Image 1 (cartoon, rainbow, N blue to C red):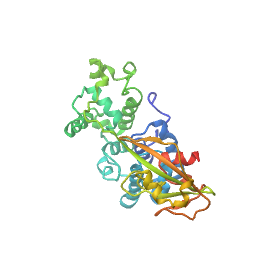
Image 2 (image 1 turned 60 degrees about the horizontal axis):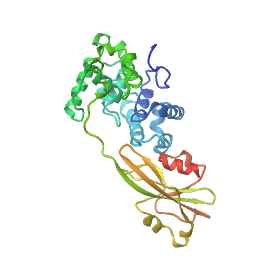
Image 3 (image 1 turned 90 degrees about the vertical axis):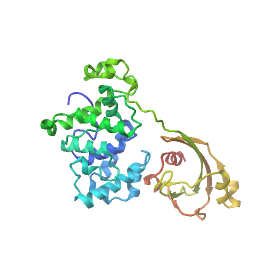
Image 4 (image 1 turned 120 degrees about the vertical axis):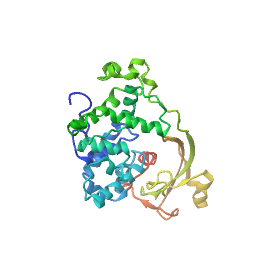
Length: 332
């Protein structure tokens, strides 16, 4: 293709593993962030068999810092199902792909259309914006019935069935690129858009009105105290977080609901060695986490705090760690 994006590491391929991995990584995450993660992931786990046989800790380690860790857990589970249920070969139809863990309707359609030429519409956030603007679709997408109607409308825009097998990969990639680079949420580049002459929103002069969604996420906040215990040799005490819950399945410093609770698990003779670190905020999609680290440096590894273990300075960088915990430990 002469236009659009052509240099992304998951493009110019019909390998469903690469397309699937990129689609999952790009959910709620910008391309500039995904590039490096995608490359490192492919170097370590280059195919679905390698991913299926890897440990979840290895997968979470590669994913660490990318956020939304349920994606990584579903990715691992999905790879195992592809091996066990489909002989290590990704299904070629969106109808079957959507039955796999972590693969929604739009991701299934992306794999099926890009890799197998199936005539099926994708409707990720970028494409949703393109379709609603082109058609002037102003129904409230907070309502499920309107969301279904938009899927039907997107399907009417697909290439004709007789040419779909040959044209669907280019059409799907074109729609994705259009939404990502031209039909932007703010300041859309309508003058550069190849379909502006057919766009209802452009004609009406209000493209930023679309898509329409009235329901907004309610933000909340939570304060968490972290016990950052280190030995003189540089080992740190980490415990795996339970599922479900914040940072489920990741290795983490012990978390507490209050400063008193944190102090309560540390023997009295060591209280004088506790030091409050700088409080910082970690922003999630719907919640702000106010994190209060307390450092405790011990001469050896004699103390323990329930489930967990001492992890050496050589070992913890490869573990699946929440992004703010990794940054804290890297700072030392």
